[in-house]
Image 1 (cartoon, rainbow, N blue to C red):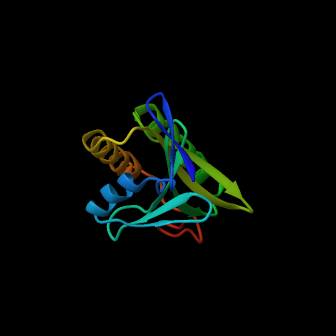
Image 2: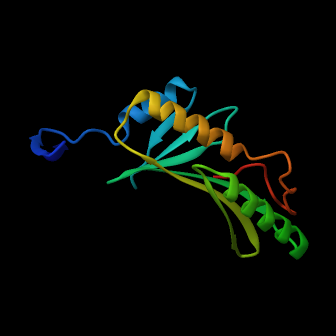
Image 3: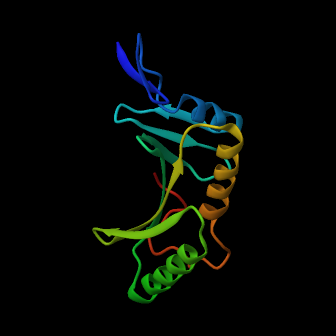
Length: 151
């Protein structure tokens, strides 16, 4: 048995609903394949759009995409930092960050979708997510050993 909350009423249910079930159905309609992982994250893969992860939070849905940039020398790192700052200034939903670990850089795109699921609102927010994650044509090149995308 699991507790579920509906508006201001708490009810006891036989089973907890699958996390993000309506959201996952929406992603399937958009051509994504989704998989719920043991840690609560849902991976969403698509043959033509960037892959990403989603996780239900008490106040919304967290989206996360990662893009491997490889080793960035100082001038290239500075170009990526300027690009990220420019994109974050223009963004309505997605925030970007460059994370470096063991000399390898990763571009992270994150967003928080406010939730209760409504098809139209989620459709608009996912369109905005796709547009902002895609970025602009003036993105710097990846560094050495950088792949196009890695999750």
